[in-house]
Length: 260
Image 1 (cartoon, rainbow, N blue to C red):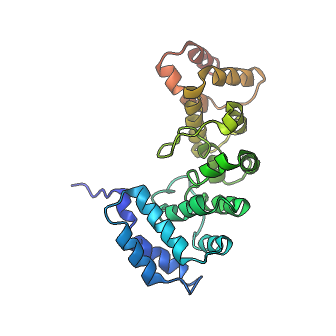
Image 2: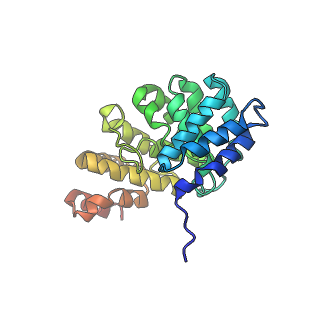
Image 3: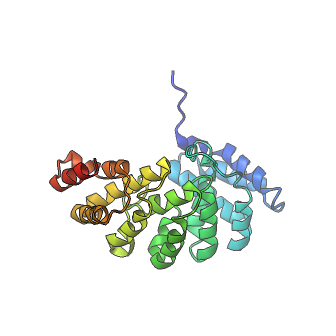
């Protein structure tokens, strides 16, 4: 008999209690009782995303109204960094409302929010939270992402790829950065030789997304990199072209033979 519990049921009174007990020692004025009661009432009969939003909204209601002060409190409850390349959902799931808080309420505080997402993604992920920022101010966002490409933490490097994916699962489809595929490719170029399997998987998935937008542009770009002796990871290329290979796309099959 299966013990599987749908993820949405983790976002309930128990999670509200957990967050309240983390916040209260840092911010003693936090109304634990009211926060827990509100979350318990409002999550009833709601699906996952709606439950996460309920908790984020309750945080906004009971934390200080000043975003800088509120986000500073939330950063103090994140806990230790995830030292592995797994467990972001199984262990870090309780931070989903924190990430959504930044996504929903932090857009006017760009630098503060990017700092928050940088820390959140080391424990959970900011791949969803970052997307409104990419749309609102692509240039400023890309400046951060260019710095993060060389970050020693693989979770941060993964965010550069995963957060900018046009077809990220569970997220609304997003156009290429500044409506130009070249901007996405410029980020991926420096990650094509990343040593982390976790990052490699994201880069391959991102490439696969891009092949659904403009397959020939992606193939020409890869061909040019290989012609210039740019180091590319064969596994990334193979997985990144999987949709084209499945459809027996001639140029994709030809390129794969060259990286054998």
